[in-house]
Amino acid sequence: MQYEEQNRDLHQWMNEIVRVVTHSGERIFEGIVMTPGPPPYRRLDCDGRALAYLRLRSRKGGIRIDISGLWVPPRRSPLSIPTASGAASLMVRQHEEIGEAVSFLFETVQTTRQAIRAQASSPRM
Image (cartoon, rainbow, N blue to C red):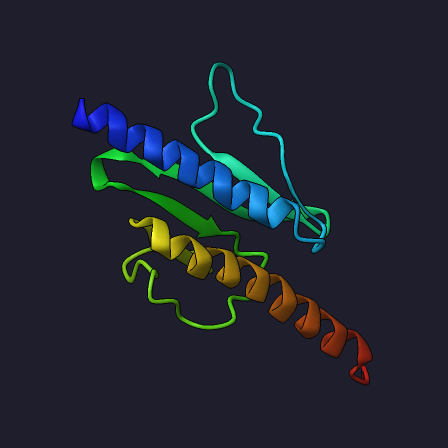
């Protein structure tokens, strides 16, 4: 029973993360996961490319958020998984950590957009 309860909570937290970021005005939306059967993760897209993949990690008691390598992480998060490869990976284990995860996603979008603007405005040789 406790496992089912925890799993239900994790599903609700994931729904909350997706809802908050997709209703933010940052042009982040839920992407389509092409897989037969139920998708093993949820995908967030922004500016025409994958921003992050969200996976339920029931055995580890959390939600793993992997930032796509197409994005520039703004900083190291307290939720960072130090051994993970890729741009950045976070593990949300408590409801109170959702705000940090959402902020990190927004900051990643802003940091990457600024880097793209800076690169576009720099003189080329």
